[in-house]
Image (tube, rainbow, N blue to C red; front, side, top):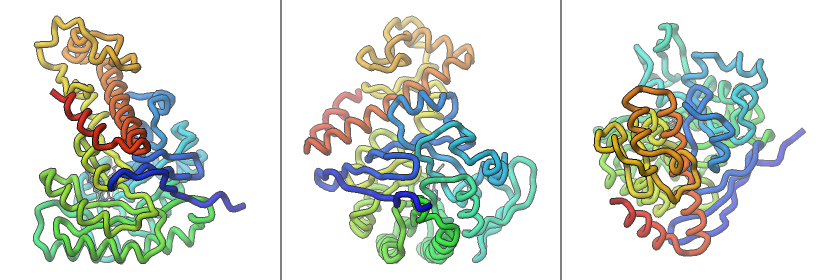
Length: 374
Ligand SMILES: CNc1nc2cc3c(=O)[nH]c(N)nc3c(CCc3ccccc3)c2[nH]1
């Protein structure tokens, strides 16, 4: 049987900011969307129900980590990633290339794909565009990524051009494998990934070439790799106008609340970042007043909660003094409460943006949020 096709509809725009909705086999994704990272089939320190209750429509999984452990074949035998992690909503997976280049040992990249050794047990692998799509299909991913090559910045122009052109050839091979596995008939989506480093002409060439291929959505890759914020934003101003207006745009790896506000302003629909979850495990809280580092002794006697106006218990029902104590004591509850608080803050910010775009008040919203940051 053929499922309902993957779809994206634009509900409203306010300048270049877009309010939309993606439909996947596992439900609706309200955009602009923040997608918590669940690299090893879990959003660290959170229960799936909690992640959902905060308004998350998508969680992210990772081909690189899951192919090594517990393997895609085992997850498939157990009913797929939705069943495995008890997340019956949309799942997006990365293709693994980015993580190989940042985590694996003895990496060798060539036209065929990337050869590497597992950072866990040293076992050898050969990740090709075809194998990456096969793994994402075995996981049952609703939104899949092409295999691409993401280079660091700054980079020589020749290097950016070589990696961008390789990624275009891998886009074709990824698409062919996705169609051979019946992805479109299952209602799944495959995104092409725009590369090109910080070179305007390469970014435009990559976006245009990918737009000529039949992808359900498009990612802006190769950013949030250490470049200054103004370089990232400049690349968005150049790239998004060259991307199809009727397809979702996913800026990979971004970002801080400010990065997200500025990127929605420049036409981005989907975001992922380890910031809220990782910061939570390191004692850092995101609040409407800005960041609070609970390792700092100045909180030791502060009876106030992080944000008495919040409807999230982690922000409202625990004093900064208590949170400081938990962080200093290395208690597990510190990571649980701060991750909960941080994801609540991010999802509350996304809901505010979605409402503001629909109301045509996005610029006022953006200014008001920034004014609160001390
Ligand atoms: C933190 N900055 C960051 N920049 C990135 C660039 C790329 C890029 O150019 N290509 C691909 N394929 N992925 C990228 C990622 C990983 C995003 C991710 C992580 C976990 C799960 C699912 C998805 C990036 N992350």
